[in-house]
Length: 185
Image (cartoon, rainbow, N blue to C red; front, side, top):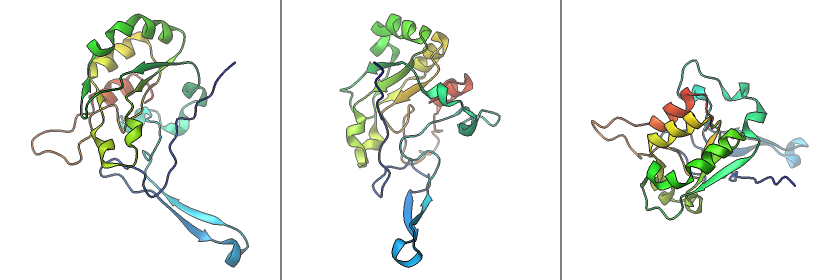
């Protein structure tokens, strides 16, 4: 029997937004009492809440979300459990290397790889920004194995900085490696 697991978060006023992204808003535009029907106005950035990063997110000529096949986001999943990490911890290949053969076999079977950090428990709190993140070597190895989708239960597979640090460029290495290989995040 196939099991379906809903990984989405509810969008509301407490939705965590990546620094600099537009805030989520959902407001009544028309009401049943006044207009005879309900219509709501919704405003959000494309990376609000549970979302997909298509290659266009980081690549000018990359595929956009509306052109991705729905089937590319459906199928078997291999979950890499990396729970118990401290805030702002880099997850290294050495942390998951013992699963290399299992990940490889899953990728050959068309599986997507999801990282469980346990950080979803911090959803809608300031602590959510301090999530563990993937080292770029993990992205490189997953691409080499043929993984087609990588997910994480955190704000980003890369480290999140609440503000740009002077002289330190923002590093989106995991995004770049995955999206350049047409691996959906």
